[in-house]
Image 1 (cartoon, rainbow, N blue to C red):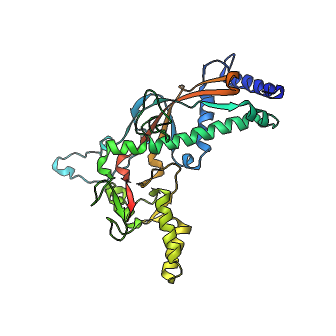
Image 2 (cartoon, rainbow, N blue to C red):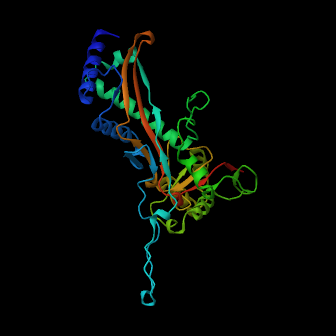
Length: 335
C-alpha cells in the first residue's frame, strides 16, 4: 500500500471507530444502531429491486411475519336480533410466514492496488462503502431467489448462487405453501409451453397461475409477474418477428416490448431469478428482515495477502408476508 493510501485509509478507520464509539475499528466491534440503519439503507438503495420490497429491522431473532396487514375479507353481517353475536374476522388465521434470522457473513477484500487507485479521489470512503453496499445488496437478492438451506459451513464452489447461505423466498413457498407451486404438467418434472405443451403461450401460463392466489388477491392491481429472462426473450423475439405480418400483431409486439406485460400482469425483471420460473405476487409481499444490534464489523489490514479486508456479518431472514398471495411456476420449458 502506498503511503498516500495509508493516510486516507487511517482517516477512514478513525472515522468508523468514532461513529461506532469504539477505540479501534481494526478490532471486532458491534455496529451501533444508528450506523447499522445507515448501512442497511445504503444496501437497500444500491438496488432498484430492493427499493421496492420490504427491508425491515426486527428486534427478535425469530418470530412471525410482521408486515402483513389485514389482507383477507372482513365485511359481513350478523342477525343479532336472534341472539347471535358479531364475530370479527381473525387476521391471524391467514396463512403467514415465520422467520429465523441467520448469521450471514458479508466479508469483502480490496487489494492494495485498487485502494491505491482510489486513494487519489476525495470520495475514497464513499467509493469503498458503496462498493460494499452494492455487493451485499446483490447477494441478498441472489439468496432470496436461490437459497434453499442455511448450512453451518457454506461452499461457494458448489453453490455459486449462494443456495446454502439462507432459506430464500421461493424455498419458503415450496415448503410452506406447496399448493401454490406448479412444477410439472403432462410431462413429469416439467411445465411445457408451446404448440404441443401444457400451455400454448406464456401469457396463458401466467393467467392460469393467478388462479392459485387466494380469491381476494386475484384482481389486485399491484400484482406482478417475475419471469426468467430467457422466457421473456423468446416471447419478445416472437412478437417482434411477427410484428410485420399485421397491424394487430404489431400492436401485440408493442404491448410486450413497451408495456412489459404477460398474462395481463406487469413484468418484473429481477436479478438472479431462477431459470425456467415465474413468480406471481406483489413486491410488497417479499421481505428481508435484519436483526437490530446484531451487525458486527472488523476492518483488517492483511499484508500477507496485499489487501484490506472488511469483515461484516448480519443476522438476516427472507420472508413471504402472505402465503396466499403467491403463485410459483417452475421447470418451464418451451416445446
